[in-house]
Each structure stands twice: as structure tokens, then as C-alpha cells.
Image 1 (spheres, rainbow, N blue to C red):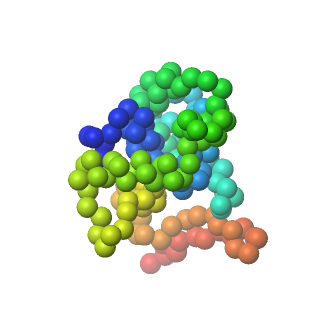
Image 2: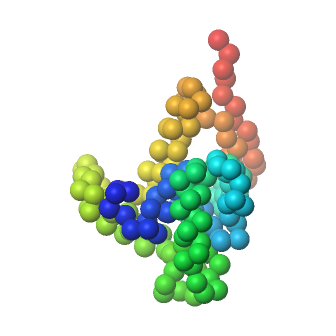
Image 3: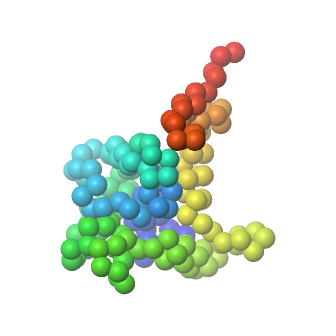
Length: 161
């Protein structure tokens, strides 16, 4: 998909792959939320998630940092969002617009999705989780903080033999 994407789409693909956020949290990123892009990559990038109400810790790769440096300079106007809507003032692009963007990219790249399903933004979460497990040698059980009936509970993997 990256090969057929325009510049903005490459920024979205690269950043989404790095961060593994849900679509709602990803679209809410504002220009002011970006870390100092002059730091050496990988650059830590933390986001407070809406749905789970926890801090999602991620890193921006050198590729994403380089793209963001150029992309931020192309943004004009007063819309604070990193991926601003062209239709709605001071709003990000919508979830449906993001879905259509991915659908169009998949078609251009001739990616076939099985059983009549469409490519969704959730695939970036899966790629992120899988790549992190592979890099860390993690066995698939995940450390995370999650809400459970209004109370935060910490899930800890059991690594004992």
C-alpha cells in the first residue's frame, strides 16, 4: 500500500504502524501533541486513550519522524488536528473517511481481502502488537492496564516456568 500512497497517506500508514492506536485515538492526535521531532529516533510518543483511559506508549521510527517533519510544514489554517478534515472546521478526518482511504489504497495496491471483508484501521493494531511481541520474544500474553467495570485492573503475564 505504501508504494501507491500519496504523501499524506504515507504519513498515516507509517505513523499508524508505529503507534498501533485505535482509529479514534489516532484521529484525535493534534499537531501540539507531537514530540520534539529534532530528537534522535525512535522518539517516545505517549497518548491517553479514550476507550481504555490508559496511556498508550509508542515510538516514532526514523521514517515516520522524517515524514512528519515535512508533513507538518504542509498543514495550513487553524485546525489543530494532525489529520484535519477538509469539510469540518477544527475537526479531524472522520472514521469513515479513514476507512475509505484504506479501502482505496488496498484497491490501488491490488490487495485482496478474504470473504468480502474490507481492510480496516484495526490491522495496524494487530501489526503493532505482533511486531512488538516478535522483537521482545514475548509469548503472546500481553501486559496491559484495562478498565473492568469502571475499575482499573492490571493484567500481568505469568513468565514463571
